[in-house]
Amino acid sequence: MRIGQQIKDLSQRQTVRQVLALLSVNMIGIPLGIVTNIIVTNYLGSQLFGDYKFICSVFNFASLIFSFGIFQAGNRAIVLSNNRNKTRGLYGALLILLCALYILMALGLYAYSIYDNNLADKGITRMFMLVIPLSLIPLWSLLFETILVADNQIGLLAKMRFYPKFINLILAGLLLFFVDKITVNKLLVILLLYHTSQLVLYIYVTIKLKPTFSDCRSKINKILYYDKTFGFNVYVGSLFAIGFGYLTEILISYFGVDNQDVGFYSLAITLTQPLTFIPATIASTHYKAFAKAPYIQKKLIVSTIIMSLGAVVLLWILIPPFVHYLYGPEFEPVIGINFFVCIGVFFHGLSDFFNRYLQANGYGTKLRNASIIVGLTTLCSSILLIPNFGAYGAAFAKIITGLIYFIIIYWYYRAIVKKNQDYAKV
Image (tube, rainbow, N blue to C red; front, top):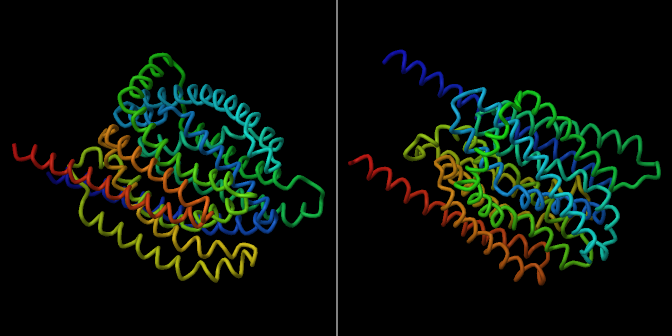
């Protein structure tokens, strides 16, 4: 008993260290990202910044569409794997599948660039086609964000989130001070810098995972099996919930004369990142434990809510002077938009916290059903509100979908806890 208790205490201390490490990295990354954004917005201006964010939103949306649940299936396979060599083999199989998905996605994006009128209306068709090869980066990012938590590779996850922001800041600063007077395509330069800074770290993470490619066919078949039984259900849900979130920014572009409102709304979302990091970090570091727990500890839920609420109030206080003095009058609309976005993101963050518990326990169907409802709510509220209110309409839609998401996912969680308690009594 004494040895067992020591092992348990050691495991708990390790989990706490992981929570603090990942949360610290995420929190340090916020000012790095904000400073980079200040440099980029001053370099591009509101119009080009909106174009930049629109292209990134399309890439993110496409990476979600063309993942087909494969990464979630890999997550499930890795969670259930208790052999390091098998896990490395799963990494190798996932990399092969990543390449195949990337080819399909690139072809889809080229077709979109040819037939979409909005790109032509905004004058960015040629630019969009030119940077399609960079769309590998958001797809690669989605892979790592999905599978690293399953293998409890929190250290690599922290590096993956921190160092690209640090490198991007350095490159953006050099660009601002040394290249600003040279005649270049500013939008192209920023897109290249943003994606290249991530590429370097993703290659590093891949090397550290030490993937193997022996018996790849059986590993791929195993992942495809989990895709049918779990991953595709989560994928359909993610497509509605997360995908329609990216679609919101895209819809702002389609209903606007230019992409300025896309930039304002995207910047407002960026400034609320602390609200997503707190519940996501705690859930990520407890992911393995969630898979074996009949319920989430009450003190963990309460502490997550308190820290998230504190972050909301702090952002409401700090953001107005921050935007006014550092981004300038051109970006003043971000202040009002951000006030409402904070409320929506707060509910989304708490919902994702409980979502991770359901995901860790394999409730793919429930996640799919919840996400479909949330996604349809996002789509309907966005279509109703964005044409009349622009970026503010998108912010109001964020609140509505956040509330719906929280109600549904918490109701599912309580039903699962009750079922576990009933089994325990038998």
